[in-house]
Length: 407
Image (cartoon, rainbow, N blue to C red; front, side, top):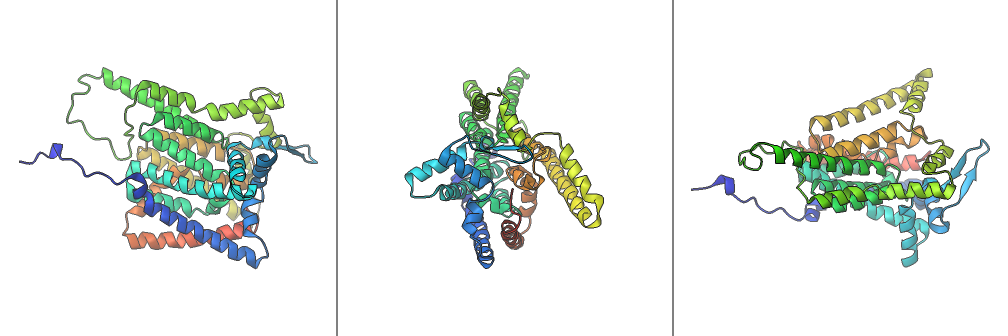
């Protein structure tokens, strides 16, 4: 007689072994992007390495790594661009690698981004695998790799490093590793201002877990229903953890972002919110999306630019639609909170509008509905579609960096 209720499920392979196909695919996509960039740049008499490591924000990061904070540029219109706007973890790592390996600061930044992008891909797989299974995890990683602005993942920018820390912090939350989640959230908070999204995810998930535990304890017959229904697909299955571990994780989470912001306020002598003044010098701020809405509306003043305006509206609508799908699919609270905050900070900021695509790159949970759809067809069809997107992404990335490039 077979007891189905006690049948033991076969053990799963280790996480990194399950992630291997995703990491191989990711590395292939990024290698294609770098090869196309190198060929395109050489044809135009430019250095692909310089485009990746010595322009725009990467110059500010390497300057912090080499000389520390205190550098600023005063523009004729009165704006002050201070390097205090750039969070310290990436330049710290650049300085560390420069000290132990014979690399320039720019080369160290490039190496950090390459390694961090692989760590980010593994983290994205881990989250998607935890919620929807390995096949969706592979598709999610490949979709993140073939984003139109995916070339930024290989630049000496902080997007890859931040996404890696955020993804693994979210995975730690989903698996009940609260101290790890809080530590990684603190490091994410030392990487980019949007680290607040990871902190919010850890805190909301912690509060929800406390509330759920309290509700279970006070429910009639709690702990005795052997036939309770399994959690719905995508619902949170975070294991219980001792209260002190959850509390410690929640306590650690905001320390990175709060510590740097308070340090900037002390350094500038402008108080706890001095970092906002630094950002104002770059004309960055949070206005609820008013400036972005005006930017889009201005596109409809002529026919050619109206097409761009229509594309922007379509893109924003797609992002919101993907988020709504995640809500309806009952993604874990940590993912929904994290994605919502990243979306809000990216779309409702008043800074340079051309940077919004790369600011949205860390919002990888938005790709989960698309990954689930991509995982349904047979493998050859999915592989053909992914290959086509990879080629398009590589060509666009080379064109982009040799043109206006990322701000």
